[in-house]
Length: 119
Length: 511
Image 1 (spheres, chains in turn purple, cyan):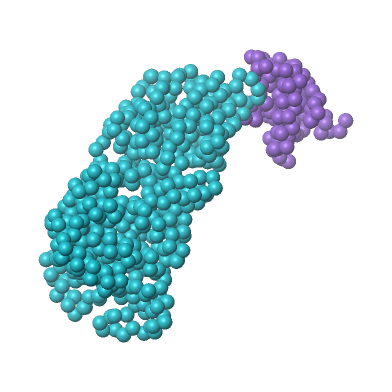
Image 2 (tube, rainbow over the protein chains, first blue to last red; image 1 turned 90 degrees about the vertical axis):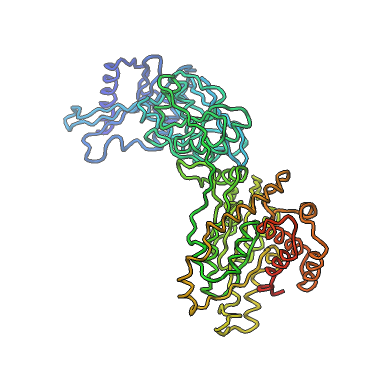
């Protein structure tokens, strides 16, 4: 596994841990749809949350926030919509992002949770 | 949850009701959509509403919000829907009900405050007509709406104040109706007594002001044409109530009322430069806006260097000069704006400017003069009631006159006479839909301007001698009527008609 995939995996498990601590219930991990993959699907208070996780080692080559551009957001939105339709979800849903910056030794330097990034 | 907040749309000077329907869906991804033929300014209100609500310390709901501006087939423009949209959203999250028989209008600022928004006056007129009682408008626009009697106008400073009011925690005090009409005119640049000499021109200007007649002044450079025109606002009578409402409508629609302003009570004096564009002067655009001629409604349109104006613009003024209003037709919209103004034009007699000058020689040849004078067409000149030649003031007499300037009549004294003459006219026309002598149609002339035999004889002779057109013939009677009014005479006497005929000298007719 190349390094960037590995970092991604670590990030996703860190995000999952974080959400569980916040009282979210993880429903899906790496759910594949026609468009792309949804990193995490969680729920809390009967609200479905789609989470896009972005991880980087150090911020010297740009922050993880920088990597979320319009196309990515569009993909995430389409993913979410198709998931909602497929599961016939009848309540609120939102899209979150979790951005993680790791130190070179893979310890967490920063973890930021952005709620409701598309609205 | 579906909330309906009533507001309005202004199409030209017409107002229709618009229901702002705000729906916060109970499912789905968060989002914010506006539908219902909204233009750019309305679509951008999403960001203003969101930020303004956040600035008031209220969490913007993470729900799917859809706003519909009904009726959906009428194009909506402007920023006035910020407030109704915000009220709709707030009412569903704070759970207050939108008060009945209310209208909302206002542009939001990012800090949650409300900015002065055009059209508050038109909305108030609409509210009065259709039985709405409460008007929620920005504080700066409240005086405008409060000019209409019998409405409860609530000045909203910011969204927090409004939520307190609607939750009945702290009530906003309504703005009281104010009697704003007064005897005020626009500050004139000059007083009439500063204009030395030019007694005939001053008299002509007084007649023009008294009857609302169009006037053209032709004279060499520096003879005082512009000065006379700029002194004109000082002798104009104040607007009466009906006129004031008409003018305020136009200014409210075009955003010409300053923040905190109320009724337009002064006759407007518009002096566009001759480089003005056709839509700028006449009105137009894809969403037809009023032009200078409408902004000069019931006031004065001063066109300095008249023959420098493009031909097209001058000819476009023909119809409004006659009808007092104009209809601008575009593929999507048809708007009628009133444009009953008094045209004051000034021009030089020839390219060098010294034709008929008592001392200087004109250096133009006949061809040049003809070409120059032909820039103003016959039909336009025919619509101008008073033609005066302005002779230059002799500068050797200047210093003597300067000493005497305190003995000259001031604008205030002239204005009193003008006001009296106008009072006579409004008395005369109180059962008609016109206000001044210049507006008389042929039926009015028949009814109110009976000419004695000898007066008619003079007019007939003049008509033959000057080859007056039928329109000019009628205009002479109107001018004579105004002169008689200034003289407080009931009937038009020979002297009145003789004076009127003086102002028909062919100073500028090349035909």
